[in-house]
Image: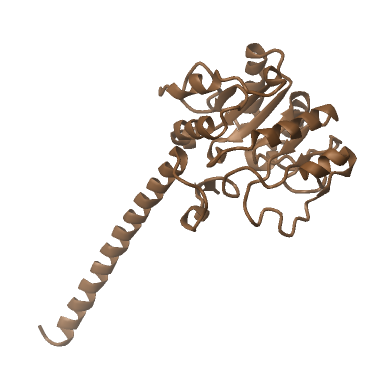
Length: 287
């Protein structure tokens, strides 16, 4: 098994805001993508040093002081197991951030803003919000949410929006913040409904009438993170504002390596086609 040496160091940090002991951060990964974990944790430490105590959650083979693992489990079973483990480590914890490993920040996180948002959400006894990615088109044609008027003037100042109940990704996994009791209710619903993978977990849980919210565009990464549909995001190939970081450097190297392999394959195919063309030409001219 591979030991993730950075995990214990990063996870032992305390957040610098009030209520830090009552919340945690789950860095979610799986066996397929565990190779990104160390770089993801380094980015987290560099760009969000005030983050809550962090725990790695995986179905893979890694181990460590702050790793919750359940090999062979589906996403819902794994997350439920992680909450049970968290209760043993932090019995006072009432809220948890979920962050997929490929959504680690690529630039500094505005912790002051996030603190104001979660203080308001908790004061109003709300159960969930997700942090919208910071891209120019994040809210263009935004028809899945509306201003969170129910939260008052503070919500307007923070540009918080209420997610429409029929939005496909009502339980979005784009860096999200959950009240643990509500998260357990959703997990129970999903297990019964057979919606146990990460994609269907995001579907609305019918009958659980809690309002969900999202922030202004502020989480420093690409839409959907550095991975999209199981591959490196095409956005990385385009001009962007993110500087070098462990996670971005790793995926860029993989992308470069993949490009070289594809170029070599195309080159060999091209040479083969040229040999066939020359052979055919020689036959036609009698050589």
